[in-house]
Image 1: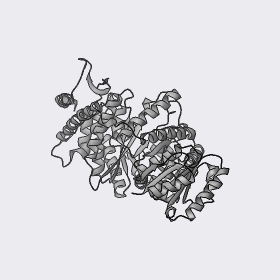
Image 2 (image 1 turned 45 degrees about the horizontal axis):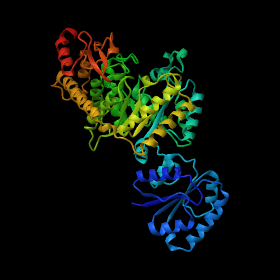
Image 3 (image 1 turned 180 degrees about the vertical axis):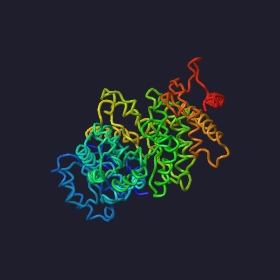
Image 4 (image 1 turned 60 degrees about the vertical axis):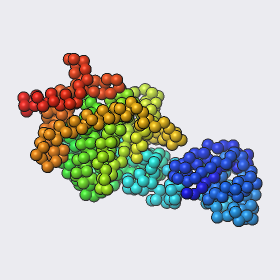
Length: 546
C-alpha cells in the first residue's frame, strides 16, 4: 500500500482540493495523511524524513509570483538530500500556479479543471491516454471507475443537428459516461419500412434517425471530451436487425430489451404477446452470443402501470432469469426508484434490496450482474427548483444500493425535454451527491424497517414465481416458456391496473399506497390482499376467464 502525504505550502490555506484528492486516494487503497495548512519548506523536509512517503502532494492556490521562490528553495533541498529523491511529486493548484509548477520537478500536475474521472484514473495507475482513461467498452469502463458509478442520461432532440450539437457539448463537459440516444417512435417502429412512417410525427419522442449515416454522425459527435459511450433504445419491430444496426454504427454499449412489452400488451408494437416474448428472448441470445451486456427492463414497465411491489420484485427475478437462460453473461439490472411517486423511501429501498437479493442469487462464473439505479420520471414536479431537489434526494437514496451505473433523469423532464445545458446541470447535481456519499454516509440498507420490507417482498415474489411454474410444471423450464408466460399474464398472475380493457391481460388488479408501500388492495373490504390469497382467487376464476 503506497503512502501519500498532502499539504498546502507556505502561506496557502486553501485546503479543499487537497482533502478531496486524499479522499479519492483513500478510496483507491492508498494510505493517506494530511499534514497541515501553510507548511514551510523546512517543515516539509522534516516531515518527509519522518513519514517516508512514496508520494507527496503539494497545493498552492494563491498568486503565482511567490511560488517561484518557494519551489526554487524546495528544488535545492531535493537536490541536496537523498531522502527527498525517489519520491513521486504531485502539484495541485489553479491554472496560473500550475503553469509555474510546470517548470519544476513534479511528476504530475493538477490544474484544477480536471474531471474526477481523470484523477481516479491517475490514482489507478492509468496514463493520460484517452483510450486508457475512457474505455469504449462498458464493463471495462465500470471496472476502471468503480466504486464511483458511471453516469448515464438519455438524449433525443427533435432534429439531427440539435442532437449532434448537444452530444458534442455534453462530451466536452466530461460529466457523463453514457449517452442514451432516444430515436423517435417512427425510427423505433419503422426504420426498415420507412414508407409506413407518419412524417407529421417526425421527432416525436426523440431524434429522427433515418439512415446508418445518421447514427454514425451521432457516434462521431461523442468522440471528444471524455468520449462518452452511446447506447440506444431497442426497436419495437425488426428488433434483431435493429440491434445489428446499432452495434455497427454506435457500438451500442448495452442492449435494453423487454420480455413482455413492445407488443399488444402496451400497443407500442404490433406483435402478439407470445411473438414478442419469443423475439425478445432471441434478442437477448443474440447479444449474449456476442458478449454484449443486456438489460431487461420489465420490472419498471409493470410498476409504471401501478402493479404492486411484489409483482415488480417477481418480474425483476424473471427478467434476469430469462437473460441468463438466453446466454447473457453481463446483465444490467435497472432499479427505478420512486415508482409510484408516493412510495416511501424505506419501502422503496426495501423493494430494491429484495430485487437485488433475488437477481443476484443467479450470479455465477458465467453470469455477472451490474446495478443501475435511477429516479422514476413521474416523481419529478414541473417546478424546476423542486425538481432539482427531487433529483438530489432520489440519487442520495439510490447510493444505498451501491450502483455501478446511475441513470440521471434530467430535473427538467416534467417541464421540457432535456437539452445539453439541462443534462450537464443534472449530472453535476448527481456528481455532488456522489462526492458527499464518498465522504462517508449512513448505511440506509441496514435500517430495520427497510430489511423487514425486503423480507416481505421476497416471500411474496417467490409465491408469484412459484405460481407461474405451477401453470405448466411438465415444461422443462416454465419460467422461460413463452406459452406459460403468456398464460401468467392472461390469468392475472402478472397484472396491473392500467392494463384494464387490454385484450391479452386480465386488468383486474387494484392497488393502493398503504403505509408508504404499493399493495394489492381489496376495495370492497378496504384491506390489503396477501399475495397467496390473491393468487388463490385467480386460480378459482381461471376456467371462466380462459
